[in-house]
Image 1 (cartoon, rainbow, N blue to C red):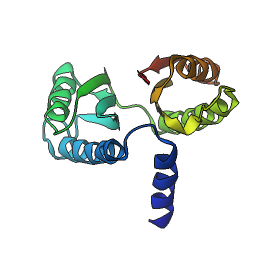
Image 2 (cartoon, rainbow, N blue to C red):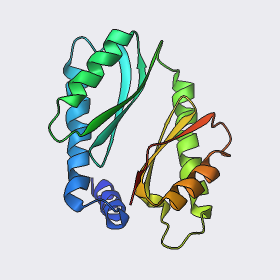
Image 3 (cartoon, rainbow, N blue to C red):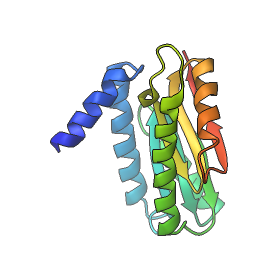
Image 4 (cartoon, rainbow, N blue to C red):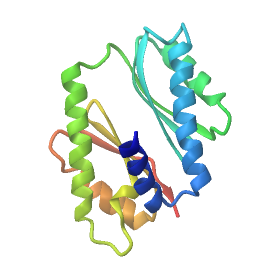
Length: 170
């Protein structure tokens, strides 16, 4: 628990979000994940991950039908402080554990490769990286130059099929 707190503390130190928004994003992720797990129309019919950045919520994963995916989006959109929901849920069977592991590896490689960006004041820890079935989603509060430079690095990571920029610009 101390290690997790230290990691969150270090992450928050370099984050461009207001500290209250940073905390709100964590609360949104926990609340949304719990709400999806408790919903009988969703649980057992999907594998959905929740990522909140600056109160915009990215939903990734798989659902067995459009109806399930739409319902998940509706559930999350009702959570207090959620400004918008970005639905990137694919329709079909859940990805394999092997693919989940590969996605974790791609995320690690993407984070590492962003350390090569040589721009003044650029800090790769300001960019949240989410990988789902070889698609990499980049979120953060960055300049257009930082977004382009980070995207350019990540698109060449082995295994990446597509990079989706979900940045907010400062």
